Every structure is written in C-alpha cells, then in structure tokens.
Length: 323
Image (cartoon, rainbow, N blue to C red):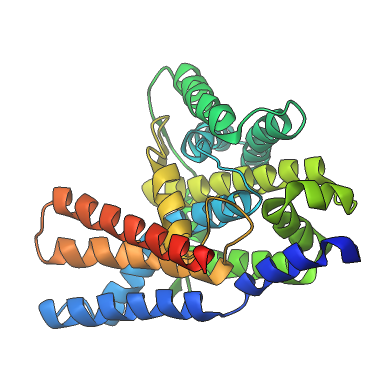
C-alpha cells in the first residue's frame, strides 16, 4: 500500500478509473456518432452491423487496454504490432507442427510476455526512454518475424482453434466475449489490487512513489508484460479468424491503440486513464470507420476523421489537466 506521504497523487488519479465526467463525455461522443450514422445509413443501426462493429473493434480494444496500462504508468509501447506478429507466427508454427492447441496458445502468450520483459527491463532497469526502447523493439520484433518465416505467411491453423475464435456465446461473437472478460480483469486490477495503486502512483509521480516504497521498476516491467501478453492475445484472435499468420500482421496497431486510449481519456503524461474509456474509444474508432465505409467515403477521409478526433481528445485532456 502507498503510505500517507503519497496519498495525494494516488487519490487524485484513482478517481479517473471510475465512471467520471470524462467517461460520460466519451460515451456521449459515441452516441452522437451512432445517431448520426443511423440517419445517414439505414444499415448502420442494425443488430448484425452493431455486432460487426464490436467484433471489428475487439482486436484494437485488447491492444489498447494493454497500451492504457503502459501509458498510465508514464510509458509508451510502440512495439505491440510487431510483438503481436512475432507471437502469431511462432504460435502458428507450433499449431501447424501438431502441438496441442492449449499449449500452443500458452506459448504464444508467453512469447508476447517475453517481448514485454525485453522492453520493460530496458525501460525500468537500464533507464532508457520508453519511446526509444519500444521503437527499437518495433523494428527488432518485426525483423525476427520476417526472418523466421522468410517473409511468408503460415497457413493451416487448426480448425479446433478457429472454431473457438469464430464461435458464438448466446449469439455474441467470441472476440467480444474475450474483450469483456479482459476489461473486467483489468478493471479489478486497477481498482481492487495493490498493483493498480502502484501503476497509478508511478505514472502520477514516480519519485514520490519510490519514496513511498512502491516497487517502481517491477511495476514498469509488469505493465509492459501485460501489454505484450494482450498483443499476443489479439494476434491469436486475428489468426483464428483469418486461418493464417503473417509476419506483417499488426502493422500500425500501436497507433490505433494509442488513439483509442487517448480518446478514452488516457494522458500521455501518465497517471491518468480509464479501462471503460479505452473500450469506448476503441468502439468510437470502429463505429467511425464502419459508418464512413457504409457511406462509401474513401479511406483517406477516414484517416482524416481519425486524426481530428485524436487531436480533439488531446486538446480536451490538456484543458482538463490545466484546470
């Protein structure tokens, strides 16, 4: 637990993990997007399309949740896309080689964790800047994935695995169920465990957290491990849907994840973020792209709209932090 001397920073940032005004504002933004596209396209506000939006947003949501933890701790992880690709090709290789699916899945998640250990150790124990470390990891993990596969995709993902990923639970696609479970687990971690306090404290004021006895280095490594594991999980969902693992998988996933976290209220200065807000942010991006696609608007303008939303979110965060 954090001692009385560091109560102020921890208390101030903990409030951001409850359903606050910023979360409500993000939700209102999502509702505005839904209402707007519902008037513009008769297909948008239908159950199949809404489920499609949630399913398409699931991969970004999982990546973004891991990114949110890293951002709250005061870091950044630009290597999540290549880490996902490396995990995917190695995990797919094990599956195709006949390794039992549960063991292959655990190994895939373990590879993601090792990517997180690599980045987290250099950030926490070598004292390197998160941006530089994960930028290096971005190139390193992608290169290893390309070298390992010789640049070729891996086909033959077992139907045993694919049937689970593409299955339904009470009519709800499995990827959506996975996102809900992961979000609940992370919400509990951030609100009900010492680790959640540590992450908030490190991002809010690292020096004060260190003086208060928070294991700062272990906390930093932990958030990068969680980010790597969630990147591998997202990769598993994608290869289960596609039936193949490509070494180029996960291109620009890090940017979408940062965008979802920022839209959801996470501050790149650290110490502030929301599990709920990140989920809503990922859905906003998914709904926006889906709606613009239904209206036959070119992808160039979809990128423009996404960029504008990110900038607006940052301006709102700046104004809020200033107050």
